[in-house]
Every structure is written in structure tokens, then in C-alpha cells.
Length: 179
Image 1 (cartoon, rainbow, N blue to C red):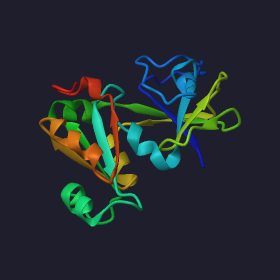
Image 2: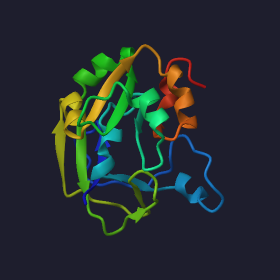
Image 3: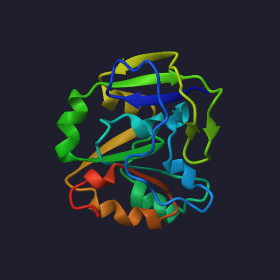
């Protein structure tokens, strides 16, 4: 399994550990996850990063514990063969279409799996083994079997976290009206 880092910067020669920009509430004993780290994601979850960095998005998929009721309520618009739905706001659609995101491949040796949707962290400097520029992010999502939905606002999705689905929200501080 490959570890990856995504950036809009095409010329990263090394990743230096740095603290997160906006610290998250962490469980007791996991506060160090807000400290200086290099973050990576495994290949199976790369679809969470196939967006311009600051683009607010919600991505959801069924788990073994997902009820049929939640599948129907939340995943009905998902075409056959897809494994997840990703939602962005309409105001980000043009930026998504114009964006180039670079997928950096990282060596696994210094990374720790934090057991959270494919996320891994390293406390050491990491030198990428290569990178690929992605210019058609919508197609890249499709290749990961993720269907993109465009909404005027992500606010109607707030209640999805109370469902039996896995729901990831990224950069929601940039979503219209999100607090």
C-alpha cells in the first residue's frame, strides 16, 4: 500500500514536520496529533484529498454497520459501482475544474498509522519518492469510484454525522454558513 501526500505545490523536495494550522479536539493521550508532524494518507482513502486544498467537502460511504435506512436516505443518488459520495459547494466547482493537485508518493518507514480513515503521520523529515500532477480531479474521483455531488450549501449534510455511515468533513470552516 502506498502512502501519499497531496499539495497544490509542484516543487516539494522534502516534507518538514509542522503543527496543524487549526488544532482539533483530540482524545486524551492523542494531543500530540496537533504537534509537528508530516501527514500522509493511504491509497485507499486518497479520494478525501482529490480537491483544491481549501475546498470544503463532505465525503460519505457505507460501513459494515450502516443500516439500510441510512443507505436509502443518504446514498440513493450514488450510481452503481461507486463506493462513496463526495459533496462540494457549487461555488467551488470552477476551482475544482481548474485545479492541479500534486500527488506525492512517500516512503512508509517513518510513518505511524493513526487508525483514522487511512491517515498516517511521521515525526521525521520525509523525502518524497516521486510526484504526479493531477489536472482532472473529477476523473480522479471517478477512478476511485467516488461520485461527486454539487450542492449550493453543505449545511443540509450536518445531520449525516448522526447516521450509521462513515462521514468525513474536510475544510468545513470554509463552507458557506458552517460553524
